[in-house]
Length: 129
Image 1 (cartoon, rainbow, N blue to C red):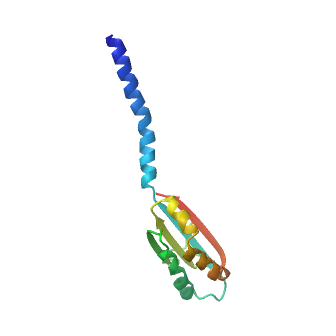
Image 2 (image 1 turned 120 degrees about the vertical axis):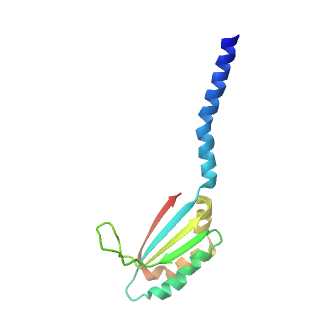
Image 3 (image 1 turned 60 degrees about the vertical axis):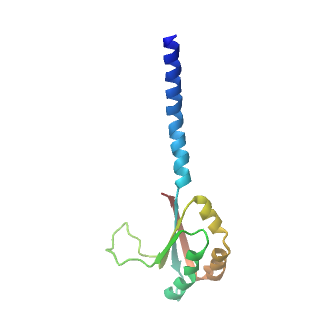
């Protein structure tokens, strides 16, 4: 009888241990945050300040948690540093779902419609933290 009880206890502990990683992953997914970085290479003649005023609307989209925008820092030229873009935006979201909502936000779409003719290239880097 004792060995059967011990066997059942071992199975219970092993089962709990097996589900622990799944529970931790699920917990982390709930807390997951997303960062969306956008780099713009503007066409010749586009005023950077005017473009940045237009781009500021992106930070006002309802699911954006935090928004930062700037121009390349005057850091040392090195092979790994890209100073070729003119404007960069970093947007923080509380979840990937919030970032997905942002993609269809009317202000975001209006910004693209009004300004896509001003950039020659745009590059996006998304990652979770």
